[in-house]
Image (cartoon, rainbow, N blue to C red; front, top):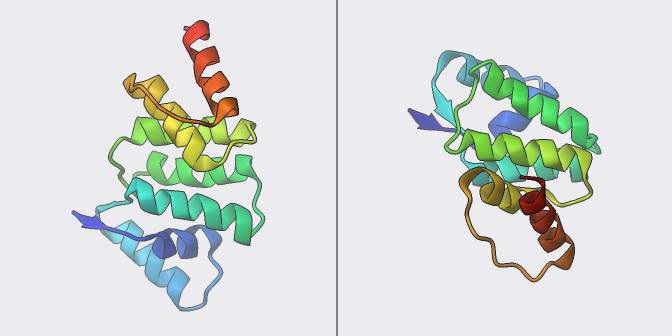
Length: 127
């Protein structure tokens, strides 16, 4: 198994480079690859901040990569839960990832961010 970086994913989903996008497609379609969560965070950040893609579309793009088995991820359920929250909230992706670790894996999260802490507390009540 191999690991891919954010640029492979970006070239694939954006299909914006004459040379690199087809290479990215070949890599994802011909190999079994893992996208580390750290690199996925970079993908989300670049898609939103650099390319101005809306959160729902980012969720769809990245979810499709997993659904189509083009990438694998450790803790995919945490990632997908974070993406879902990210797509309907104003939280940064890393904040939704922390929240998802709490929701999916029941990990205790220590934070100073009051807004995120309230979101975590609501999640406890909703259970």
